[in-house]
Image (cartoon, rainbow, N blue to C red; front, side):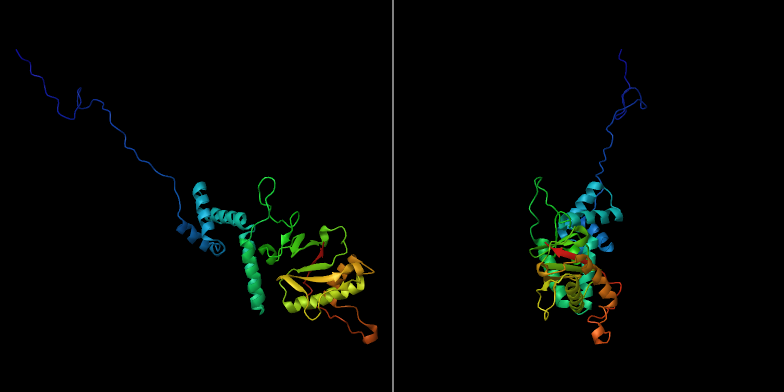
Length: 291
């Protein structure tokens, strides 16, 4: 006698339709979030940073943002600053100030001077850095152990350093010196941009203080005036080794006094002054001596 076996419907395992079954879990793979250079470029433009970055720097910023997974405006701006400093050796804020100084020069009618400074700064940015140290690192001019060259955008923007190099001459700020070593040149940096006319007038102040306190021999052509190294500064050449007094302390004290009040009245000429007050009592000069 044959016993009929109930056929199991296809798709239902033996043991009943409610018996447990095994099946593959669905697999969904989510990649890490990332941004593209176009997005970063838009945000940098909104933050006022894009004009100071190259395409290579924008790409570097994008890469670092994707590594950090922090796409906030704050991190975008900080990352751009890090990339700019590492690549150029100065901050975006310094670049802005340098541009503001150039714009001020142009507004004062010194367009040729502004263009020349901009050209020097641009070529300097492409020039080779200082030779590497023992660890292979490129030493950044810090104005202390390494003099800051005159074409450095930080200096062009009016930043003050203890050591500055103009051409072959290193100038040291008086606050960082024990005593000047009878220099042949001096550098003066103002707390605001100067026109050529103002620099020429201030060189007259320097010459008067030199005659009274140092007695050095002026080496500049009075018809030409002092050499300009930045919109804020100028260099005068004086052979102080021929001076009899060499009273540098008095020399430095006389400069702000003459700027504010003019030179001492002349008793032989009805109380007139050889140099009148400069007309800007807020103007200050940093004094540097050449080595």
